[in-house]
Image 1 (cartoon, rainbow, N blue to C red):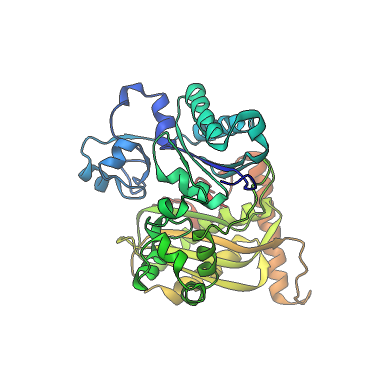
Image 2 (image 1 turned 135 degrees about the horizontal axis):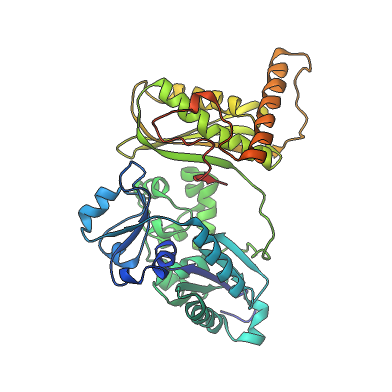
Length: 411
């Protein structure tokens, strides 16, 4: 890296969830371990795994029986979210010893801008190595670090070699290190995008870099130009200072059901419960949604995603449920089984945004009445707990929707 370059680190904890669980389970040391839900139910999906389980072919999001088939000795442990949050905070506090420019990317990943820290702590690679040593000594956990001149290459560097390693990606070596990697390894390239690139003969990150950006844009829209920029090292996004809140872009809730949804009554029950959580969180953030998105997965793991815009923004469960049901009617064959559903509120705005509707319309009167009811529910939950009140259609269900369950929320 040249003297004018920024020096960005990306620190990625190794097998974070499984590693945290193993801190309290020394009896499982040296064994393949996976963190999962209840092994006795359809919630039994692999959430995370350690390196030994990964080496045996265990992958995240597959069912327990599939993982056990690959790795009969796989040891299963339940998740403890409070532990992960605790260690995430501890680790970010270690990063803050080196710079205040620490931007969490997820619970187990963070970017650090150490450009101005080199006079105190050495080169970017020396800082990364010192961070790895400190985290290992103080927490018993390990991480892999990428060092580069931008955030994207630092992220790819942390992915390049695991566990407990530092990889430096410079202007001189990034073509040799990164361009031979599969296009699927590029950040923000999922399976669908990867498949579309492959059909166009684009197999590696280097292929992305040397492609015509206009062709990529025609193929992928704005994402095509973005990926071309990233592959060529043209990323100037800054690292945010720690604690700077990112604006909430979407709020969603999803669940894998105890049994497949088979009819419209099942689907309405599921959507009612999911939309209730999403709506209450919208109100908590003082936001409304101009759009609704539904992700549907069937028992073969085939997934579709559909969304629609709303004429009037909402933060009411009843309106989210109705819009989500319209999407399913339009895109899902009646009676086809559903394994998993996610409802997301998208295109968010401040809840005080002006609503261009007649103050005397029946729709507005229904909206106001619904808002009064749901805000009353918020007040009851704040006083007596989240399970104190819910929609009648959710009570006594056998599909796995808990009363106002927010364990699977995403923002």
